[in-house]
Image 1 (cartoon, rainbow, N blue to C red):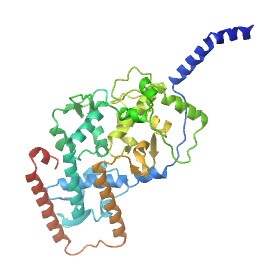
Image 2 (cartoon, helix red, strand yellow):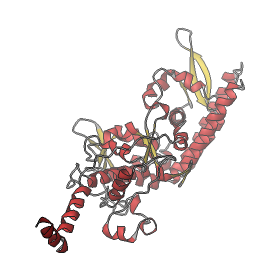
Image 3 (cartoon, helix red, strand yellow):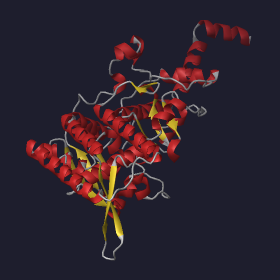
Length: 413
């Protein structure tokens, strides 16, 4: 009797409808899937050296902004917290690793003890001048990057401390608060936050900027049916030798078919306990990493973004759950999140002009370490005389650049 009734129900489509409803519910519930972390030597190589490169870049900007292009070690030590160096590494030791970037001199303090001072080498000065020129040429593009970052937030506001953590990744000038933001009063405004911190507020919403990277060139990268249904798929690739179980493959295939929610629209209607909400979180960080120059950032840099981006607790778990989209590198005693699709091996798919300058700085760092190990750099009795001449050259170059640029452009310096 039961089999007869079941057969009738199947013929009329009741069982099929029940099965579809079950699949529908599974799609929208958060499936408990754990994927293992597998080391990717190719992407690890991209992260190696980034910590030193960032620290050197910040120090170069600080020294260059000084009136005499030379600062004592105690002045540079005030900025140590921004450099991300190990606590047991003396700043003077780090700077002396790169004698082709920093030139050392000294003066006597009131007690007669020598105080180390550091200025920039001609090679470092030349590269930094190129960097400043690129910043001037790409001012509008960098403005749009900052606008899009603020557009990702629910209130269009971010504390300056949060932006400071991302300014290197976004390509903003070191002193962007004074040299960049005032140049765009139509877009940004400093505001006082409820906790008495200073924040940056977006004044103008541009619909042209509110197009996620995943939606660009959809006709070339997405299936016509997925575009019609709004279930855009993320580009996925795994580390060589990564073994994906069949259960995980089936879940990932179903997950990719879920609706895609733009990170630029209000998603408060989504249940945070669902895969649909998780796909939206993945979309937020997919877009955020695309805003960075190297398509990567340290995991700790996004830790303060939960409330501004209206994300649930433990939102960074998406990095572990989707190793085909993000790779977590554990080099340099930190965790760096890399967007896999942005690289073809070790070559970036898109290379920004600022990235090229940083690569030239990286080459200088490697050369400096190698030459220093060979004893190429030796202090001479004429060091202070040479440093004096170098300061004059640096100041002269800055003066010439100031006089040749209009007032708004010169604020970069």
